[in-house]
Length: 497
Image (tube, rainbow, N blue to C red; front, side, top):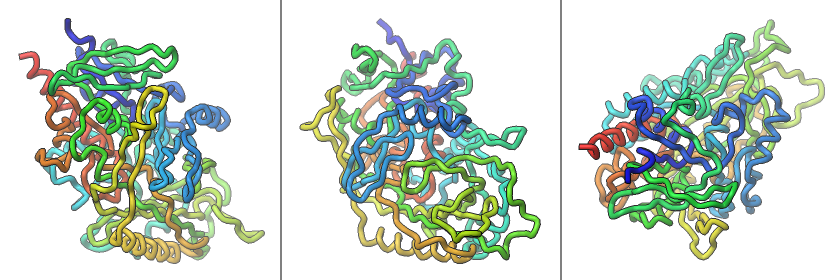
């Protein structure tokens, strides 16, 4: 009997959706299904929560999602729409269980990796073309905040501090956003990547479906076992190819429980240590005619400590460079994160939040592992994390802290001292199913995402990125997903001959 599906994809985030979209565009006859354990937050499924105009409705939808573990010592509350893993070594490690995954909540920053951020397992030309396609799928632009008040002054001041002839200049952050005709912003979630995919006859999105095991026959994946979370019924979906893109913690767990256990599985876990600060732009840089109250194409971001969502009106960028291995994200906010003196008038865009992301050195000892003595109701093992900073990491954080301090001072009045966020706060988790050029025990998959020693099992997501980076990883992960889709199509064609 033939398999009911050509491809089963576990995970409806940006990468899982991109793989499905690329496959369906290439061959509309392919039978595809994407499995998602969580619910859709809005219509269309996989839309970004910032596009839900009614804040009460948005907050209700977010409150309905799983909350996960309570905060652990040294950590903060989960951000809206996410659930804490509950790992003392990485207190703010979090996951998201809804259609779109973290792609329904992300900041949408999409810088390209450069220099030593680029995986050496990938051909540079292949990656460049895939990044271009990823930018199309994500609707990346550098013009989303052209109307942001005072953004020119901010970029000029930071450019004077950081620009060098051999560096990319300070400028607008590339973001996955569409500017509407009225100037308002529509943020990219996986619904944008999907387009009309879920209306096509051979493509399906199934919610409330938790994948519990990959079935294999020798080196070949034959499909996925799942449980219907609404009814408790268990099913098997057969497929000619299987893709697991279920985040950096649950992707390796699904491989582990399925008996797919390469030596590097779960290892080389890394993220971006994050330093935060805030400043008030000095009045001398503000034109006399700068408005006090204007309609802005505002978005929303989560406060550094978690919890509330607050508006922002501009995003600028201090790009990563080899000689200063940090990535700076500068957000203009509509309210100060700290109390100001009575009578101080704050103009739109004058309050500035600064976030610096650091590279972290790679180590196989930083890992996610699975406690088979602690099983959940679906017999899946608990997620555990081993993670620590070494001396080089602490030195990098100290250098980045000085950079942030200098940046805040250059803009005007610093609003407090820079501070290091708890581990896991970046939400950029990489490396746990990392790619490699050769199967030497230090990687889980090849450069196309195919798991070593399998014929048709693939992994996707930030967890496939093998390098120590500082830039936001989603664009790169989607680009690798584009490469994965191409490899799956070639595999399916070979299988039919």
